[in-house]
Structures are given as C-alpha cells and as structure tokens.
Length: 270
Image 1 (cartoon, rainbow, N blue to C red):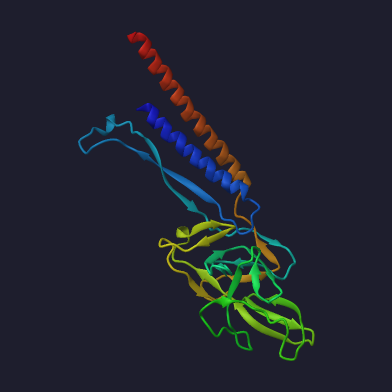
Image 2: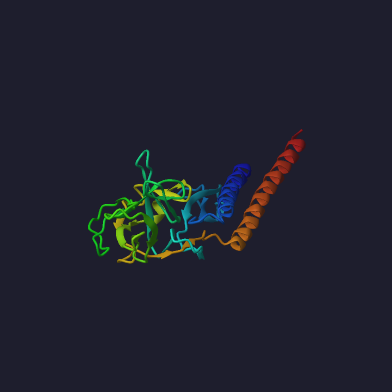
C-alpha cells in the first residue's frame, strides 16, 4: 500500500510543478492570471474503524483555482493600449467563427477597414453611442471606427478615455465619439475556462456574462496608454517550485525505501 500512497504523492507533486511552471512561463504575458493547485488527503476507513489505526492511502488533487487579482500596470504611452482598473474583461469576437472570448489583455489596433481588434486579430466589442458619447445599446457589437467623416475628412487619430469611449479625430479638426468599449463580469470568475492567448471562455460554472460600461457600477475604469502585467510573483513561484521539487523527491525516496523493505522481506523468506 505504501507504493500507491507515495505514487499519489508523486503524481500530485508533478501536477503542482506543472501549474507552477505554467505561471513562471507566463510571468511576462500581458493580462495573464496565475493558478494555484490544492490537494486533499485520502483516508481508507469505515464508520467502525478506529481513527487511531487509520494511516490513509495518499492524496488527490482537490482543484486548480485561478487567481484574478489585479496585476501591476505598465505605462506604454500607446493610446490603444488599455488596462482595466478594477473588475471586468474586454469582450472579443473571432471574425471567422464568431466565438466570444474574454481577456484582460488590452493591446489593441485599428485595421484598414476601421475595425478595432486585439493583438491576435479578434474584433473588440463595444456599445453604440450618441453624439455625447453615451451608450445607446446594451448589446455589444464590433467596434468600427469610420475612416472618414461625413465631410470626407480622413481619420487622423483614435483615442479612448476612462469611460471607454472611442473618439475619432479627423483631418478637418472634428472629433466624434464612435463607440464605447464593453466590459463583462461574471458571477464566478473561477469558473471561466482558459483557452490560451490570455483569454477565457464562459462555462456553466462561471455563469453568463453581464455586460456593462467602464467605470459604472461594478465595472472597472479604463486606463489608456498602459497594459496590465501578469499577476505572477516570480519570487513566490520560485519558493513554491523548490517546495514542489522537494515533495517529489521525498515521495520518490519513500517508494525507494518501500522497495528496499520489500526486497529484504523477500530475501528473508528465501
């Protein structure tokens, strides 16, 4: 039985190492959120078993939880780099499949057609607005910046304020609000499914997305010219890495010891 007990420890130590390695590997990934592995013990006993005689049969993975604590902001000076100061996720749509995903990575760009996209080419979602920049819809859609205004003047620059309002400046000096960046919150962020590229997809555990405007109610405000760095603390992860390595070595040593004891018993019987 000691073999299987230590084997469960080896497997869990390996899982812990994988989670820590993933955190360290993404220490520089914009908008990345670290994960933590937790474990629980396994006890082989019935209601009539004397608890003083129950050694247990190892451990099991209780779960891997995501830590959505706010990361530090890094000033970039680029107007289309956005960070959310508080709760919420940017909403993006795949231009081919239409699949909706959510991210804290606010690195954005304007393409030739005027669509606002994130760094991997997904369309950023927002609300339509009136002439004063107030949202006129609660259903997000693609943010499209007209490349020329009604007077025929060409687009010269795009800026985004703390309320997430996208303002287009044209060559004739006019400035027009064209959309407001939409943010999404969830009943349970821990239930979101990571899908890579610092993006998440909704699941039954997370609950459906609730859309809103930056700076309103529970939604964070927008910082332009900055990006949110990963919330991974390398010093903390290094200590955790050493601990997981020691756990792995200790369980391997326990298996080696059990092997030696078994071999001794076999030799005695022979």
